[in-house]
Structure formats: structure tokens, C-alpha cells
Amino acid sequence: MISTVNTFSGIPEPLARLIHELSKLPGVGPKSAQRLAFHLLRASEESTKLLVLAINDMKLQVGLCSLCFHITEIDPCRLCQDGERDKSILCVVEQPLDVIVLERVGQYKGTYHVLHGVLNPIEGIGPEDLRVKEFLKRVQDGNVDEVIMAINPSLEGEATAMYIQRLLAPYDIRTTRLARGLPSGADLEYTDAITLAHAFEGRKTF
Amino acid sequence: MSRKERTYRIEGIILRRRNIGEADSIFTILSHTHGKIDAIARSIRKPRSKMRGHLETLVQSSLFIARGKSLDILTQAETIDSYQEIRTDLEKSAAALYCFELIDLFTEKEEPLPELYKALKDFLEILKLTSSSLAVRHFELHLLNLLGYQVHVSGCVVCDGRLPEQPALLVPAAGGFVCSDCRLGSGAGRIVSVPIIKLLRFASKATLRDYIGIRVSAENLNLFSAITSELIRYHLEREPKSKYFLDNLPPSS
Image (cartoon, rainbow over all chains, first blue to last red; front, side, top):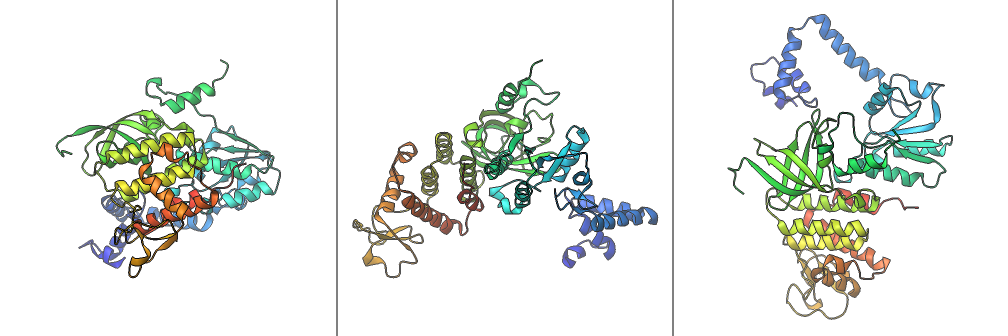
């Protein structure tokens, strides 16, 4: 680490260290890291303190819900604790961000299970790297009538959904998946055959 | 391939997708004319992207690509075949992903391999119809042949003598079977039974369609799989990551 930090010649060591750390963030290259670091250098002490505090609090207070594995500051999370939500329906998603997006819609009133990824054999990501075991335990504990697969319809996502469906086969549980078809604002001319086929399959009475 | 051409059109099968940044993805494509290439599709993950459904792992597409500074840029895509029969079947999807990984690991970028492209297309066509593991074994051996790692199955690799109709020693380092007279100093190997030797021989001359029609016991199929895996492992110097997934799928009900 030291050798990388020292490559910022003429830059004071603490600033070089900050640039080095910032450049580890996704989508932040060395130039952007340098710009961000210089911005923080010029910023007021108050605002940098708030940033440091926010990062610290986030690391200390945000963890994973022991039931659904969504990000939370209390365990179980608010969604799992909510007595109004239907605990017999479980919506399986890839990432915590998916829960946030689905909650923004406000239509779904069941509970979630976050896998934290999808099966990706080529990258060496197998079921043991996801929260599959924990999902199965929730199912085995009973009280689940329906599992909704809200996994992205990529090849890996489809494989994950099929894998989970297989694990659910011994249980008397209804397995459903989110409808697929044309998004709002879509153009038929540029729509692929798979989406069009799904759109026809899932057509509704007008 | 001329570096002067600023744009080019290819037909290709998408082997792999990696998401980067806010909404971009990098695709690894095996093409008919340009071999394996990496190309980036900008804003592909946005709902309004016109190429969105046409660029996905296990899709054969007609692609229009512009040369970029570091990565070529996908500008147009139109699906030729989305292999629905494969993507809706877990065994078939796992087999396709495994073969995609093999191609990715064994090939270099921008090295035209039209025969490999045809072999992959044939394999995927057969995979639509059957999830027979013989199809995967045939593809593995065919891939090795096309890339110059052919297993010598007709005779002893050392003395070129005819192999008698009995179990023989397969030495991956030597590139094939070694007769009992030449065994000393030929390297580490594994004794292979006669039915497996015949399966290896037939794979080198039979078409994929003919090959999947043969009857093989489950035991021999497992032994055969172990042999091809050993050959792959020897040449790659590691196990492909997707092999474990392919071999450990939960049973279908």
C-alpha cells in the first residue's frame, strides 16, 4: 500500500493516502479520486466531520437482517417486524437495492429474502456463496405459502430461479415470478423476440 | 483483420456479460469472423436501451461494432437465436455456461476460429433437443482437437504401434495412449477401459448428432467424464469454475 501511496509525488502523505483509498471505490479512477480528495481538502472542517461520521455510523450501525438479509440498522429489520405484512409470501430478490426499488412501488405487502447475488458458475459463484441455505431454512420453518421470484431475467438470474424452484419442489409452496413484457415507453421495433413472446403470453383483457 | 476498419459487423454468440459502471456492460463474444472479442455496450442496463434484449449471455446476435480506444463499442444488435429451449432448462443452461467458460479459457482474443464457432452453434442446436452429457463430452474433445490438443487415440503416442484391445494407459502430458512397452518414463497417467477408449475414438470421427445417439451406461459415462475433465484440467492447469456447478445440480423432481 505504501508504495502506491508514495507514487503521488509532491502530495502530502495524508492526502495521498486519501486519494489512494478513494480510488478503490467503484467507478472512481485516480483522477476522480484526486478531484474528490482536493474538494475535501478545501471543504469546511464541519462538512468533512459529518462525512467521516456518516461513514463511521454506517459501518457501525448498518448490518444485515438475520431473517431476510436486507440491510438494516435494527434486527430483525422493520419490514420483517411489520405486523401488517403478509409473512406467508416471500419475495426473493438479488440485492438489497431491489427491495428498496420494490418498496418504492408500494404495491407488495409480503416479506423479502435477499440472496446477495445470483448463481454465476463462470465466475465461480455457487449456491454456497448466496443466502440460499438461509432461504431454505425459512421455507422449512413453515408458514410460507408463496415464493415470488423477483430475480433479473438474465441467464444467470433464470438459472438461479430454476435452482431455487428445484429446491422448493418437495414443499407444497406456490412458486411465481414477476411478469415479463414490454416496459413503459418501449418501442416494438427494437424489442427482442424473448420479451415479445413473454408480452404475448402475459397479455391481459383490455 | 485490418486495424483500419472503424466499424465492423459480425455474427456472434455471447459467452459472458460483466456489468460495469452505472449502466454499461462488457460482453465477451465468440464471432464467426473475428474470433473471441470483448466489446462494451453503453447504457445497456437502462430500460430504454434499444439493444437491451438483444445482448445477453446465450444469445446469437447480429452485431454492429465500432472500434474504440481500449474496448470496441457495440452500437447495434439484433437477435438471431435466443436459445429459449436452453435457458429454460437448468441442466442445459449449466452445460452451455460450462462450454462458454471452456471457450473463454482456451482461446485468445481476436483470433478467427470459424470452426469453433460452427462447433458451438452445432452444440447449442443439439442442446436445444437434449441435455445428454455426451454432447458436452463431444464438445470438450472437439474443442481440444480444434485448438491443437487432440488426444491421440489410434495408437501408442510413443512408438505409434497399434494398441491391443485391452485397457491402456492415457498420459495427458504425452497427448494420448501409451502401450505397455513404452510406459516407462512416459509420465503420469490413468488406465482407461476398452469401452472408454472406444468412446474417445468415436468422438474424434463422429458428428455430434451421431454421437449423442449411442448408448452408454451411467458408470461408463461417469468414467468418460472423469477422463475428459482430466484432459481439460491438464491443459488449463486448473478446473473450470463452472464444472462444479454442472456436476452438482439438485435433482429435478
